[in-house]
Amino acid sequence: MRVLVVEDDEQLADVIARGLRRDAFAVDVVTDGAVALEKAQEVTYDVIVLDRDIPTVHGDVVCRRLVADRSVARILMLTAAAAVEDRVEGLLLGADDYLTKPFAMAELVARLRALGRRALRPRPPKLTWGDLWLDPGSRQAARGDVPLQLTNREFAVLEELLWEPGQVVSAEDLMERVWDDRLDPFSNAVRVTMLTLRRKLGDPPVIATVVGRGYRLE
Image 1 (cartoon, one colour):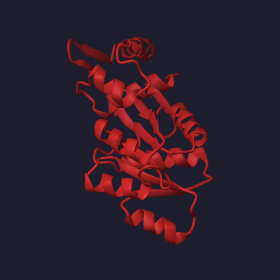
Image 2 (cartoon, rainbow, N blue to C red; image 1 turned 90 degrees about the horizontal axis):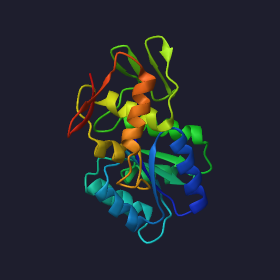
Image 3 (tube, rainbow, N blue to C red; image 1 turned 180 degrees about the horizontal axis):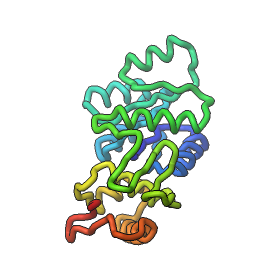
Image 4 (tube, rainbow, N blue to C red; image 1 turned 90 degrees about the vertical axis):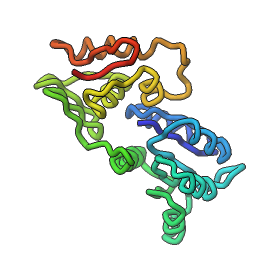
């Protein structure tokens, strides 16, 4: 799942990003509203975590613009204002959810997972393909009766393939959905991750390479 974190407190933004990456989210971070709007046009995000009080373009304006532009991303508004009126105002602006600071990382992760299931392309709580299954919420996956010990990247790649079972997913799509803007576009990270994931999934092979196009489950 690709997430944009818009937070001008760089220390908090870093904590959020590291916490989400540990749960296999691909995370981009920006610190002002103008850059957030630019990123939202360049990248298809599943969820945008949006602080209201940000510089250059206020979070309320960013939210209105995203809604007006029919962004597919769900918006979780993040703020220190805890009054009911503030929460109601945020939701009326078009936000899909509202979380006040301070918050527990586990709650943020759970809310993002829930928003992902409410997206235009909703993600079911559990993904299956033959004897293979993956539960994003509990971070568990198995093939048959054998639990899979996957890295965050391997888990996220498998989640993307299971989300579109049988469909070809290109390396470029995987780079966008699983990694983030820190990845060198010339990196061989996708190929290496696919090799280790296939080894862990065992036989018979379940991930096929479609030459010149990408990968799919079969």
